[in-house]
Length: 392
Image (tube, rainbow, N blue to C red; front, side):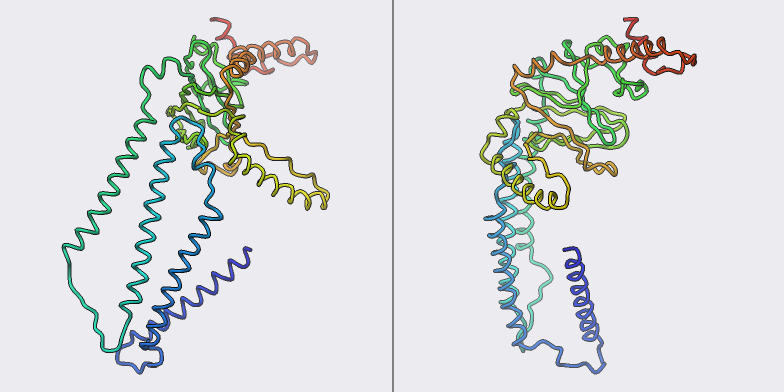
């Protein structure tokens, strides 16, 4: 396929250079020019009909794509309460673009045929036309202004979180680093403790300030669990470069900027189980697994293991090209029922406790060692941090 594309590019480039050479010859005033290259009335008529043929090709291609590739589950199956607003804005934009493209392309190709060159016919030239300029300026301005105002209205509704919303909300920190995501949850106090990259030591890989009282019940997870119907307030940090927390099914995206905290909030409206049961998603998963099954036949024939069946999961992705493994920077999102979410919370372990446990294990290993090595050289990172915890 790559070879074919290269050949097509080379052929098109050769044709372009050939046409440029002909244009250059026609511009040489006063020299003997081969008049056989000058377009005749018949040539212009043929080119006019070819323009109409190309217009038909554009419309037929558009119709074909709409019929065979116009089924987009993500355009109607959002999993957050604000998702329908984003989908409506996208659909309005697509309809406007499609309508304008259809009208302008039809006029462009029609005028190319109607006003084709004819012997003895002179083109009408006028410097300006205020009426026409007013029409083609004011109409796009009004349409774009309406689209922008609706977009600002939707953005304000999505981003604005009042005090009533924050009272019962769940606060979660999304921590980005090349090429990994980790979530930090506020414990029972509902407040995330302070954090700084300077505090990153041992198992405290999020840099949580363990001297902060609010940080004592914070816990971390490599899998993002959120309950359906509950507002989630995300606080986002980056350890190294610019990342972008992108959750497509929830219509959520926000940059993670080193040195500052950004935020985004939404309320999940579908659990993972409910999303898996939607007809559009069932069809999508079936298509993916059919492709995988076909690919697995070739893999097994060559002695390689078959591909595992695909199971749908919500994902947190990075939408910034943040390095060589950017494509693999993702984290599974599980939307639970409120009851299942509470059960999951009970199994989680606070970061402070994890640090303390790591320090105790390091001390136990040091005491059991008979090598006589300097005790300060054994996992000193965690013991220096846990001192702050034991003082609380």
